[in-house]
Image (cartoon, rainbow, N blue to C red; front, side):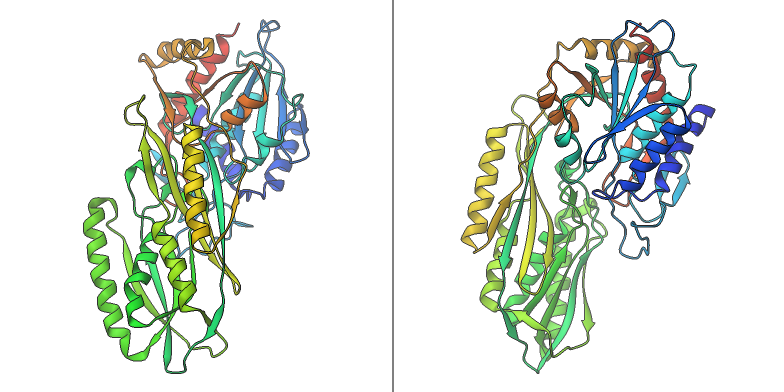
Length: 480
């Protein structure tokens, strides 16, 4: 690892020592403000705690355009079930694994902490040639994009916009999908559990998960879908559903899901056979994609105060979970290999009075996105659910004639001696909202290589940090 990369990773380690789950960015925002003060840089922040640090231009760049460099402060907080990590207080434990950097049983947060680290490295090195820089660090990108939605027209002044939230070095992103989230509330009525019944926990685990935009085309198993299929298989054995809970975030494919069931005591052996058979079928269906897919039953203590969801409501709930779409809905007709529209059955959460289901949708065609949302709403209402749709965010339409794109291609080729790939992606980027709010922005997104974001398998390819840095420095120098 060269000295520059070590410096960037060192900043990233400092950032990773600060808890920063989505909607809890207060500490990282305050740290950024203190960092700016300690380096003699001016900053400002807004009502939701977006932070903007201004870096003066280098000599000779007085007439160059102001460049905005942007990343988001928050991270998806996922961990393996055996981890005792507390995201509200514990620093991320980093593990160096050859050329890769990962975390110990949790998400790494390189999405998008590495962007913050690279921007701050630029700010603290006064020898680098660059125009006036506005370092824009936004909040809550991973759950609602609240940060960019709250930006006011006077918060940034630059017309050149570099988003450092892409995840494959050597690829420039020039467009992305739009998206929305649907929350379904299913009211439940409760019934007593017969004294002759026992209680167990049905667990679906060991799946790969991943980013619901970046990885949706991989056709990985969804733990919530697997759980629903297992419950459905057991319903002929007169089980009672007490609760179902699974998934952690709207933009992460669920890796773990569980249900608490009541069952006739003499049915346990048959339940085990049914679950084992379903596991075998699913492992065959998903083959090498999900070698760790596991279904298992754990015995629980009987509690006379626990009440089950009424059988009629449970049938409707399980039927809805089975019918709600998950995965690729359609592929792009214009760009081969690009997912156009998809859906992610993200989370299930049970309470005494209701079960809440969150499902997120993405599409580069806003008409098809609206059609998919309408379809999901109809399914939910037919099952007796109440629907709440988020405002959503727009797609970012590519501009292949962009002057910034041409400048980026030239800078990358000069540094890396090869041509970059130009792509649009199915994931959502803050560029889409920023472009709709600030007229005249010339935008592009890039970044170092990150594998399996939004899951505990997330890892950062360290050599790609160096290459991304060299390109970024060459690009900024070219604005003279």
